[in-house]
Image 1 (cartoon, one colour):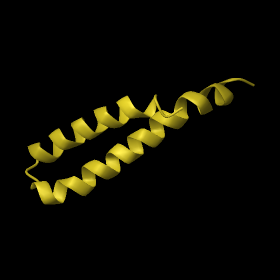
Image 2 (cartoon, rainbow, N blue to C red):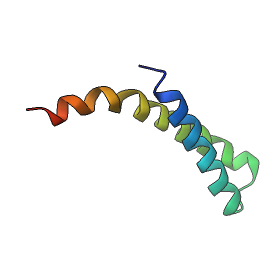
Image 3 (spheres, helix red, strand yellow):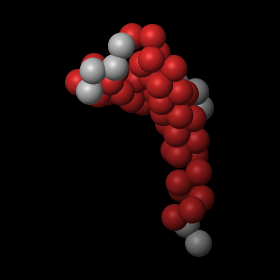
Image 4 (cartoon, rainbow, N blue to C red):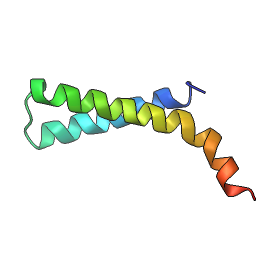
Length: 58
């Protein structure tokens, strides 16, 4: 369950870090944003593969 969330969390954290750097955020302000987006990506990646089949089947 958790193994599917780890790569998605890493990908989202990297993309968020790149976006924060592109808009000019300093490292202190970007750290909580990156951590929260990684947590959201982890939860998304850990739950969607298990919930989605139940939503698609009648």
